[in-house]
Image (spheres, one colour):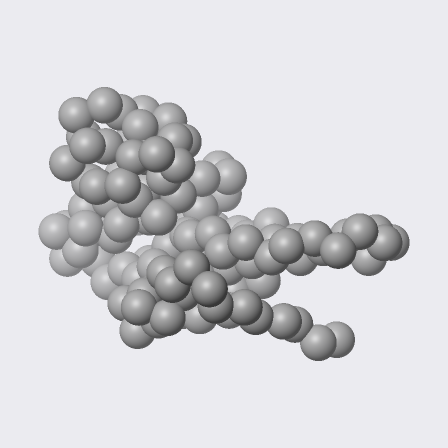
Length: 130
């Protein structure tokens, strides 16, 4: 059952890999048990695809609070989606969500590989207009 396999991968990445933004490669993550949100999403993606389950990395931002006056910087974060039972299921090993996405996060792109070069640049700015 592919759902059971995906749950096992999810629990491994979510529980066994601690969040650490200094770790930048899957090899380092497997050696140290630590990884950045992007590396955790990449590891999940590779493991799901090895089990023949379509998976993709999604790029998200945390939405600012409605009543906040502070100018918050929007930061990218990463999660996954897997294709099970004819639909894409959200999975977030960084915040502990399986089958749902937190309300305060907005997906801005559903294929990280397509936008990787753009969002990895240091001097790029984005704005969201409501």
